[in-house]
Image (cartoon, rainbow, N blue to C red; front, side):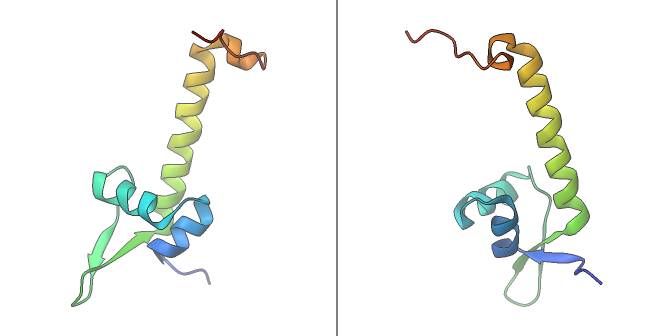
Length: 79
């Protein structure tokens, strides 16, 4: 059985981002998490991480749809 809650280090590894980026996502509320224990350690529920990933996919689709040149593998001209 997979763990219900993940430590921030685990989330950082799954997303392939730094620990500080993970902490920023949690502190901003973009990635819902809870503080537990006497020392208030952060934990992210596995389902919340999956929901966050799905939101990122949706936001990426919206970005690509709004920027058709990026879809063709072309970058806009540099300023």
